View 1 (spheres, helix red, strand yellow):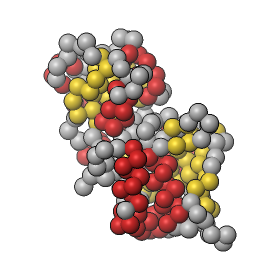
View 2 (view 1 turned 90 degrees about the vertical axis):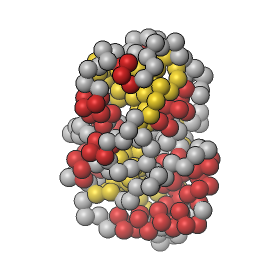
View 3 (view 1 turned 90 degrees about the horizontal axis):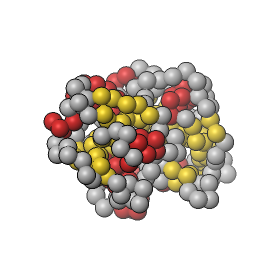
View 4 (view 1 turned 120 degrees about the vertical axis):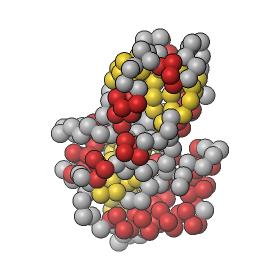
Length: 257
């Protein structure tokens, strides 16, 4: 789960849109912000279309709300400032619900919850978390994985990257000893050709103070859209639509408790 803690002022929004949901002619229209560089949750396919688990969930929620939704791909560091500047109406981008973020935005109920994990090269001599002492760990900047390393792995060296793609390149080329991210993201990566260099070392215990209470949909403070989203999340869970989408991407439960 990609979980930001450093909230920068500038936002860069690229116009990359598609429509979601079987909207009524007089239904609501919403623009959804997402950082489309986080497969399998959000990514851009060969045709230039934003895809992923989060995107399919968002489409299902929009259909349930009888709303017309479009997506814009937005830089992660500026995604909350862009929401509050009304560049879009909500964020659907694997963003965890944390106390720090709740000071700035409201959230829907969670729609998935998975732990962080460590990936290392297949030939690594590191066999457990204790072996990361003194090692260089690559982490995407502005995520709570940064805070996790600082708190729980303080005797390692932290190296920050603007995107997950960049830390993946460095661990595959041996420039860092390990990387930390959501277990689903890393698991999907190590199963791919690009991630054939590496393996999952272990998952990490969730620190609720850092990792939050799961990934939710961020909206501006006081926005009544929160209640609509919560009702829609409950509805797609009850109807089986959530399970259908989950099974498209995963062979295990990602909703959590």
